[in-house]
Length: 568
Image (cartoon, rainbow, N blue to C red; front, side):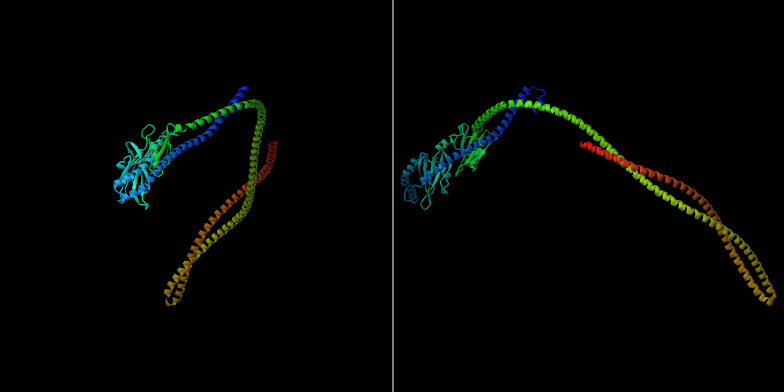
């Protein structure tokens, strides 16, 4: 990649130098990353190991302090368990010995015990009423008696008292007889010189280490021995660690805003606590030195490796550059060949696109021709249907025309018969008029006959009856004439209407006949036109069918040409 980027601007030697430089930088970078990836976890583990060393230091000193307290308790227990001294105390408690005699006898025993241990500063023996009866060595402060728990049956070493600004450990041991009854108590003031010397022993803690022993007095934390600076003032972190130890906890405190690390631990069977602190810088100093030496070694090895790689890569880079130039020449030739092939491919793609366009247009033309064929067939079917309907219409009009001509004949006959009926009714009217006049005259004659019958008297009675009957007959004739006249009037009215209607019907039949003739002529003309349309549609259908077949053949040819060209 670099050779391709710089070959147009750098000479072969310059390019070789750039490759060697970048290779060296890459090797150094990779070496540095590998070194960091290796050193960082190692540094973390080494730091944890140093912190464990600090915890080990506090645990070691804790064991020494516990051994010191245990020894003090053992010494107090041995003094309290001396048989002769116990018997004398028992005799004194029972009143067998006076106080002076008791003190004189036991004083030698206690002095002998006092002489056997340089750490004991004072021995005080209490009787069974917890009253001090004898003290050898340093006088016991009266305040110590209030600190002693006389109810416990074990040796206690929990309290510290100061006599003349010198701290002493108060150790109390119960005195029991063979029946395991408490008959007194021994109180020892135990010197803390060796414990103070142990506290001032900073072996393994460097120049900044501190060991602190503390105990609670009421609600106050008391430091047993002064620090390196001669004071007893503790930092908050150290005070917290010491408090944690007195509460029975153990561990390590890493204050964020403090440069020290603090390890703390409790003392077994004691309310005391112990803590050790040390500056981080001094604690990690050996580690940092070791890591520095490792870093220097890694850097040296990396430098040597980089130089060796440079010497190894020098001939390889020269060969790489030569091969790169050859490869570039080959790539240039390949690029020119690819350019030619690319142009040919572009032309082929354009030709294919053109063929595809022609094929799409031919497909569209084929679909259009097919649609025209379908439309022509549909129009041919419609024209044939219309031609059939026209022929049926012509046949129906022909039948209608014949029926209308027959109807015209019938209407003329009806008109003639109606005219004859009208003439007959007029003649009947004349006859009826004559009958009416005859009835009137008969009525007059009957009336005259009646009058004459009346004049004739009894000889004219029969004639009167006949005259009466004739009159009645004349009245009935008159009434019949009236009815006949009424019927004739109605017949004449109906005949008039029939004549009028038949006249109008005859006129309408004539008009309809003429319209039928005109319609028949129009339908004949339409039939002729539809026949021509039918013939033209048939011709169009045949032509479009041939055109569709031709287009299909062209499309198949174009597709074969396209597939052959694509395969090539």
